[in-house]
Length: 514
Image (cartoon, rainbow, N blue to C red; front, side, top):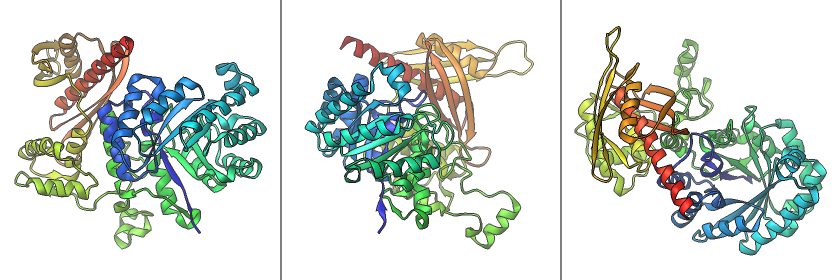
């Protein structure tokens, strides 16, 4: 009989806390709804004690998302647990996820605690959490580098204290598949009561082994995988949800595992997250990259024409990639657009359809042909959440090659308070000129760190997508822009960065006041 493996998604917690992947409350709710549609088993919505913004996000997800269990992270200290209980209160099904570091280096250098102190804190924290919830997960942070006997001792103690799931994370991405398999097998044989609770794995990708290590843990007896969309997370990221899920699904003959995830929604979920965070999915990314089901080599194309099975181990439709490409035009109506979006894996809400139709009609007037990828870009752009307070009213850029004067950019921004401001900047290129103009309007200091651009679809009239990273007054943010004019796309990306920075500063001010 096949085992069922739970998929614990930490995109909104471990993923969102990594540099360049921060999200607004509205964006977190959008991703949470997408994860619910994807049918993940658990959504880790945040770390309520970390900040008022994190508390609000967990509370909002708990209030509005049905289906998955809503989890929140906390240290094994009373004030953290109390905040977590309050944040999760609206959820119909919730989980308190409490943790403490257990490895020698963490005990010595970070916690300044003895083994006995760590054990006592873990037990007290789990016991307090168990009084508030019948679903408690305990994580032994840096468990992979913890002495085996002490790891077994602390896991036994927290199970006796009320933990219903125990997690053995590879916090620093240090382990290897054979080590993971051996450790999980050993723990299952050694720890009394562990066969009565969930056993989780949480792997980071510092050595590029997060997915392999997670699969090895499953073979060793793990019943839950902690992962994130597109593999986002601290440092090199987490185990990629789409990769580990499709490995289990495609190699069901080997793993004999059942999962609840609707894999047909993977592509839409991945691309939405990329748009929300302003980070492209690499073209060669497994499962969800543009090249994942593309074949250019002649020998591969010949084999594909004979039979898809020669070079494809998965069907594109299994992950939500549709075979057809060209579809809609300026005469297409609301129902056609909504139906096509549904086929692509996007469930549009009534309140956003009008805005999407406006963007669609504007694009259809400019382009001869509208592709699925164009429509997806419009949808994901509309679903990234309100960015305010600034919006772009007008832009004019002059670029020169071997000219006597520098490139210039003139723009008008509108503020949510109803005022507008126009400024002109110059620089060594159009983006540099736009930065100077934006600095004057918004009274901020902007330093561009990176800029990447790509074509969304085919043809000379294709939409261009710009992804940018920059610091605003010394703090790093990312931005995403989309337009048939690539310079305008860069302007949109810069403006999103400024709006993120403005909103972050306002939240920090509110937190200080509280």
